[in-house]
Amino acid sequence: MNDTSLNQLLQQFVDFLSLEKGYTANTCRAYTHDLEDFLQYFMKNRALPMTIDADNTDADASDIDAVSGLVIRGYLGQLHKQKIKKTSIARKISSIRTFFKFLEKHGVITENPAESVLTPKQEKPVPSYLTVDEVFRLLDSIDTKNLNGKRNRAILETLYSAGIRVAELVGLDVPDVDFSGKTIRVRGKGNKERIVPIGAPALSAVQAYREALQAQKDISANGKGPLFLNKNMGRLTTRSVARMLSKAALEAGLTVPVSPHDLRHSFATHMLDAGLDLRMVQELLGHKQLSTTQKYTHVSIDRLMAAYDDAHPRK
Image 1 (cartoon, rainbow, N blue to C red):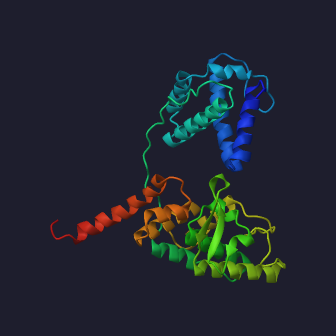
Image 2: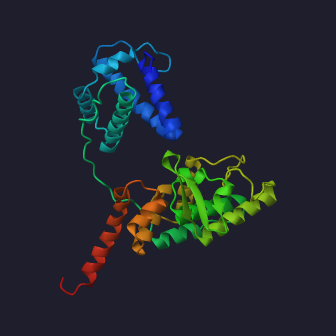
Image 3: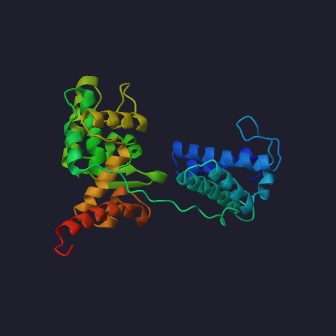
């Protein structure tokens, strides 16, 4: 790396995340924001007059050698004073650590100053989820008399049936659905593909939607484009799916806000409650670490303990 500006180093890092690691645009933006914030702090406290922005590439990359564990801890102290959430601080530390690991690997620095910085302990909130009855009420409340209704029903059925992330859902293309094999091909985090089962009700809803799409918009039910389309016949965004679900939950009479991720949580919780092995749920969800999946067991254990307390004769 022969570039001499911090901006260029940062851009090379973001390009690495996007092109080689397969991170999404949203993830790359989050890394960029975190690192720009940290580098602004670093240069301000070193009395450097430059700023990290798109119009300024004069900040000398050699200054990065002056970043130490002490500097990073000072930055974290500032974040604590600002009462930034622990989850956000942990994400920022991860961004900084990954950035310096990248620089170390490419010979820009000799050692990673963030390695000695500990991530603050975080509470592990129990994921929010719907009961089986609430999920059924939500799905059955969708009016499928028009094309939008058919699409919305197919979307929610797919989210709950396969337990996929909303970003994975909007990334589905028509060929990703295997109707005969009852599976879908999903591109998850890091652009990693996995095959997950999908139930008959979801497949029926998807088929009904695509057939209606062909009849009303002359779009092939077996084409190669996005599986779910917006009003302009383009690919849906995650935000539009979230808005649709929020409205559907309200119309279904659910008393709490519902997000696409809540349907994923509900899927995982219901599968574990039904006795599915934790590692199988991990595989279905596409989790890299088993510990990520284990948070769903807390819900099931809480329910099990309540049932135990109610049923055991020696209370």
